[in-house]
Structure formats: C-alpha cells, structure tokens
Image 1: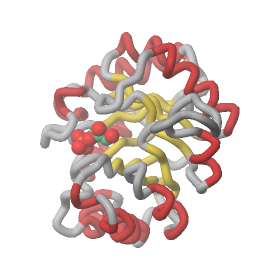
Image 2: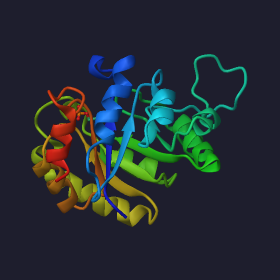
Image 3: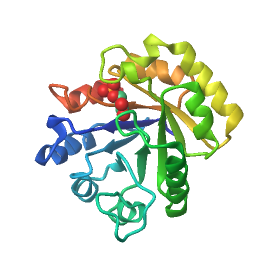
Length: 218
Ligand code: G3P
C-alpha cells in the first residue's frame, strides 16, 4: 500500500470558492506514482472537486446523521453519493465529543467511507483506537500551521504512537501531521513508521503549489 498524502484545504482563502477547483487541478497534475494523494476541500467546494478532478476526495468532517431533518449537518450518505471517498474526523479545529466520534466512525464503516481520525495525544489515540478507524492522524495542536514539522519537533512521540497503535489495532494505520512542508519531513515521517501525512497550509499557500508538491513527492 502506497503512503497516503492528504492535503487539507481547510478554509484557506487560497483554496476557497472558485480557487478550490483550480488548486485541486494543479495538485492532480503532480506525478504521484509512489504515493496516494488525496485532498480535503472545504465542505462548500467538495462536490465540485469530486466531480471535476480524478483526485481522491476526503471531507473535512462528517456527522452521524441520516438524510433527513438535520440542519447544518454533514450526512455520510450524502458524502458518498457525491463521490467522496473518506473523511477527516475530530480535527483539532473541529473537535467532537468521544461518544459522537465513535458513532460517526461506526456509521462511516457502514457506508464504507474511509476514516482519518485526528488525535493530539497518546491517550487520545488509545481511546480512538477502540473504534478501529482506518487511520489515526497524530497532530499536536501547538505545531499546526507552523513551520516546525512534528517530525522534527517530536520524533519520539511518533514512534511511541506507531508502537502503541500496533498493539491496540491491527486495522488502524498511523499518519502524522502539523508543519509538514518538505520532502525531508515526509521521508522522516515514513522512516518513523507512519503510513503517510496530512499537510495543511504548505500546499495552498505555496507560490506554485504544483511545483511545491512535485518537489516534495519526488
Ligand atoms: O490537517 C492537517 C493539519 O492540521 C496540519 O496543518 O498547516 O500544520 O500542515 P499544517
């Protein structure tokens, strides 16, 4: 299985509105034989990106609700129906209570939507692993959006997270994220035992996102 590189567009102005599709199209041009590259556009642009590119598309959030009377929620079945492959859950910028999270993971499994559940500590990884999501992404909150990569700031905790998760689940794979912005950061993440990375600001905010990502995925 190729390592997963998920680019989270968040709601950055460089990736909002009409810009989302342009950015996704640039990312789609990057040679990515060695990696599975996926994007998580904003909820307002996700359908267009899923329809008009050949990229694997993740949602930034999902709710454990059916199609029906649920104002402002993100039904899993609707994500599926518009061509979305998976979803990020419990991102530091979109935390949900553990019970709610467990329900969402269960519903995603029923709908066959891939789950990437974020955790910011080993104790959170422990609790989330009970639900056996497809991936847990270790992202220390204080490094998100910064220039120091989690792989430089705290490589030991990534190794601990990899080992902990391998004891707790034979299904769930570990990703990491926060400040990842170079091919060295990516290489280090893989060397430490993760199965891929989440990248936030570095791609949408790059002068030339296609060039930037190409150099990273060399
Ligand atoms: O979801 C990815 C993320 O939170 C990391 O963001 O900007 O530190 O790469 P960033």
